[in-house]
Image 1 (cartoon, rainbow, N blue to C red):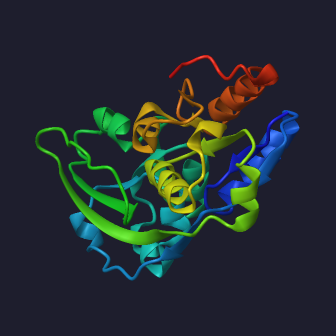
Image 2 (cartoon, rainbow, N blue to C red):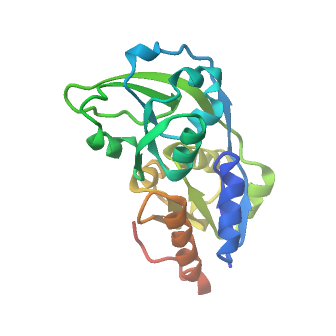
Length: 237
């Protein structure tokens, strides 16, 4: 069985590795990103109707400024973010599974002044007419160089899980820097936009059916079955 490599930041790496092992996969964690808080200037609460949270990292690293928004409605991505938002005192009114853009179609008419608490790297949003958004960067992900152990590991066929476009681009750049043959690496991506950021010339690139860890690990398990006898992978996205 090929190794399944997880490169997302902690604590996500450990969580994904544990979930993969429960599926019988040979999973190994090499976090290629570190997440740290950023200093930010809170917006006056009376100027905000609702909060947008695209990642649990905004809640882990938002600091004391989050307290002034307790009780406000929150539109979030993912169940982990929703649970963290509730624990922080927000009223979760909508949970998206495909990114923040998908939740904007469900904005309440009286939630027109939005505060987006985000990372330094983020996807631009297209707001519905009549809505406004203020963005505050509350955390940043810092890329790390690929460690020698991982560089050695991917010299043989391996599957790398990609949870973000930034991870895809960084992996591609590190392979170029270290002159690693991409044709030995299969990519399991959490969505098509992540796959696009990875570029070409990999063993194969496939995208999960839905943008969540469960679907991504199911894809990895399927790809492991396609690994034998040196015949490569069927193409797919």
